[in-house]
Amino acid sequence: MTPKSKDPSKDPPFGSPKTIKISKNKKKYTTDLSLLKKEVVIYTYRGRGPGGQHRNVTDSGVRIVHKPSGIVVTATESRSQFRNKEKAFERLILRLKGINRVTKPRISTKKTKAVREKILHDKRKVKMKKEKRKKPFLEY
Image (tube, rainbow, N blue to C red):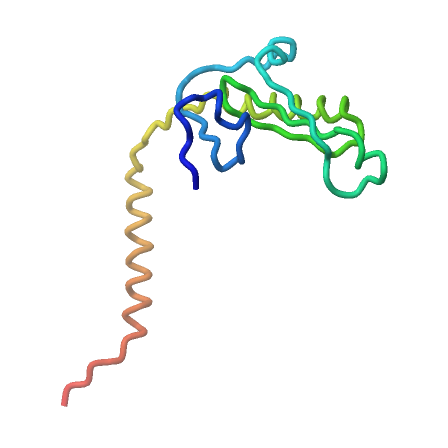
């Protein structure tokens, strides 16, 4: 395993999904397509797998790297680079919407008296069941 260099320009432009860490900051990322196109770097490559001659000679695979968030998205389903680029942007927008979503804070609640009594009642029933399973104590 090689250590990462201090200079970010020498680091690879993309990484495996395991190496990407999405920070817990509250920064909102834009999901507008025209603005996204300015924030991303698009790489093309030859898609792998079945597809025949056309797929083996064209760079139809698309990898999009969103620089502000570090998200990497790929698409290689189609033999058309244009369609793959559209699919990759759709996936990127979905991922950014997931990051932008604000989770509601959990409000802790107190159990009502009736619920507490029901829990105790159920515990007593289980205790009685277990008591019946025990071997009887016989005095001699």
